[in-house]
Length: 440
Picture 1 (cartoon, one colour):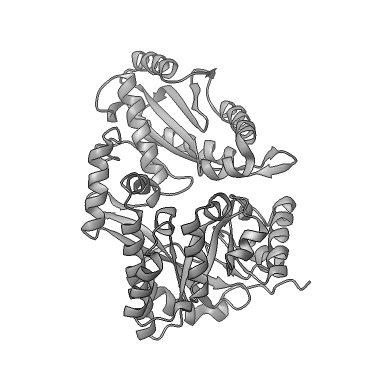
Picture 2: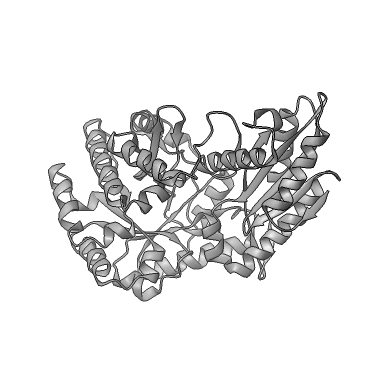
């Protein structure tokens, strides 16, 4: 295995050499690996911490590669790998290698006397799938596959094919496509349930944007949100999500399901609009919903980093009018206790970076316990995000977290599936494992 610093020039040279070695029995491939949620890692661990994480990952990845493979750290959070001389058929070998690389990345990484947990998403291109036989074509195709993987969620892997993610080097055309999709109703709300840790009862749903692409299937927001932000179209997206959420709430009521609230995310662009309160009130009144049944989700970074008077006034007005306020991604934006109280926050959503492997790591448990204790003292509920295992469900309940959401409860789903899920959850709730809260 060869470790090289630098970027495109070095990896292209390695890929050209790999192509030159290929024959009918052995082919080559390009692979890209990237840290999932790099912004969250940067917020929690800082630039120095991310460097430690990448250094540790470099050692681990190198230990899994062959002597002829070449790995390059292309930027702060991405690796590119040249894989020569792969025995045909090569697809299975590449997929197996990705699984091993992702597995080795999952182990705890010591950073500043604590443990960081990370995952990697992967994109790859096999030699015979690239649009042309060149190093640049292999590398760019692996990059497009990586973007496709990232859009599918953490620790995904995708191979390049002719239908893979469109070339984002054409931002204007892509932005136009996303805007048109939003206007045509292709971007819709999916819903992820939140449940009580004490009773297992549904305490709400969060509305999450998904793009039902006519040829590529369902696309996650990590891919198309940057285009909407660049086009200053986040308000149009939140208006769409609000309409879908309120319509879903009314349908749940008609079907006899007790869903106390639905949460909608509002971005900085929304919160800076002086007419935001009137717009929300108009929609809520039109659907004849009590304000308490709408939860407004606001990123912690908005509260901690923004002194905009309009934003401050809007958040406070939402609380004054009875809308519930959730502070999202808590632990990544360093919001002060004064701001949490000043904005009358109802719940804080504990970022999933604290939740991962909480049942195995005492340090994670101490962090969660500190957050929950602070919230209890302030009379604020807590929601654990990204709960993926029964073990995490158990420890979070015992630590006193009041609500949970994540794959261990249910994945985000289109509205029609929520009706089926709610019925099944109501039927089987008594058989589901819920754990009593630990008393102080």
